[in-house]
Length: 367
Image (cartoon, rainbow, N blue to C red):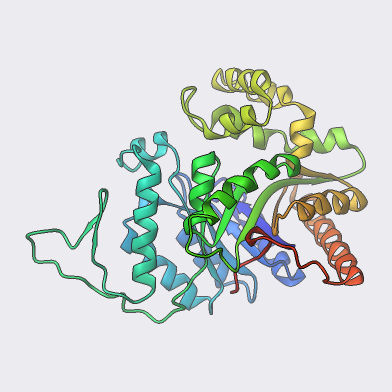
């Protein structure tokens, strides 16, 4: 299992701190850093900035919003980031939600699965240096009865940049298993991932042959220390934002995820409080079990054991989002996570590699 770093959203007053974490992760040998976008700084600019100040760490768009760019614009950005970084880029895509898609980008949210499938088809076509010609329900290239013609991406880069889908719901999970090289998950609990993995494998079954490499990447909040209650309080604003406020009362994918995980009443309570702008109360209303199951909390021994739980169920990359009162606390948390991961790797080396009964979800993409 590999270790990643989530740098989250930029433009919130902590950009220099986030960059310091990325630089330290690069020094420590962390596999990849993922950056996000919502309706602030765009992820392409952020990754270009980080790539210019690091040497070996992978650069992941986690995610580039599908409604924010045409498929061709995404292919251009992916090719540029990959070429400029010496082949370090991984492309994560997501449809966002109706509030951002329709309110910010002016793109209708209807039929997200079909739009995602067509979008990925065109991005892959462009990155493979094939002339882009596509006639689908959502995208038509070139436009009919016009002056356009099928064009080929004019840029030197890898032709098979790993492509991930961010997915929360069962149908999106299945689509990721069918058409992507990896899955980006949030609020991943090892016990519940057993069910999510079945959804990915349903997608694998729709392929002509199972993928040789598929990266199951779980982003988890990280807080270190001896006081587990304090650790949970430190990270609780993060899930509260998503479960309570990342979407409307009618359509919030993270709220729906918490419900599927068995927290109907608690998720409703968090959402009510968050939408009433009682953010502190919303964070306090989160069940401690939910926070613990979807985070890495505690000292190095406990975090090692919790990482092992993710490895045991087939998660191939754990991406940590360090929380703390200041940069020093976040750096310390990152270093503890690296130490825990090293213990895990050393333990695997001691056991050996005799396990041959593995499914596609156990593998990571080559890069």
